[in-house]
Image (tube, rainbow, N blue to C red):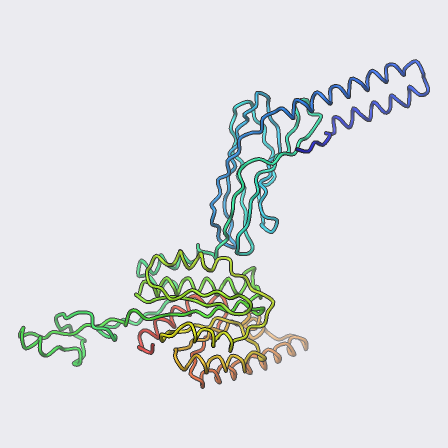
Length: 436
């Protein structure tokens, strides 16, 4: 507990000092000056003692333990004055310093046994684990001579996850079979695929190769075989956590966009009966073996929410060698990264290694600024030079991607905000082709 004098007490002390100056010139007032000083001191001490003995108000915080990054979340503090004295205080929940907050601190006036609700909003800028140690109160003493700082309430751990509100929107659309609303393109097929599903009566549009002639002969009517996309395949994400993924656009870090895409594709893949896993590279080492089951989305959230980008340069070849040693079964390996010219030779070597056993898809995120420079009108020499430099860079980037394709990789050259839907479309295209 820490006490601070209020302006009222400071004003009383100032008046007493003024009386001291007068008493120095008029000795007859010395007794009055001393008595007034003793009175002020006595009242101040009594007020402080009363404040020290006052019971702290009861505090209960209502805030979800799991918060989405970059999104405003609501919090409520319920207070009750458990003292027999009126209470006036400022309330400040001790949120992490990096969070943006609205509605704090708040001033509360409570009569004995009265309740109050303090509402505020907070927005975490990055993922990870954070601590809220309690709630800080700046309480005014009964006679308004002191302000006391107290920390009350229960500490709480907060987990900041990727923005699952966006993921929830996408998954709702996939659940309702409205994938076209989010940009997912699925070609309508009838009875095609690689795994046998069932026999059914012939329908107009079925191909001749679908007809089961034995069943047709036995039942004396045309019977078609219906197939479905192959199930029980494996999807492995190789997630770059190196320095390139620290780049942020409109408050969104590239790694955050990558994790959003991983979670969405994982949700879709698990619903298709496939197994999903991931491995990280670029200074962070984390392995999540491929598993099946729609309930695993929450497990993936818990396994990725605290991933952070580092200042290290990503070693693609070493990561590919490690994944080959861990992942024996053939899988679709989705490499999510952000490359520049100097990364090309290392990435090519990694693709060559992975292609020996797996189907490789490289999702190479590019900065949105490059598209903006390409599309804006050139009105000055500086803008012309910038435009030409951007064109040269994008040309080299396309050449690098063509070399990767020559080595057998599939390429997505994409802006970070386009990544989730583009990856889902690629996943469905690969399933449709039976390429895995």
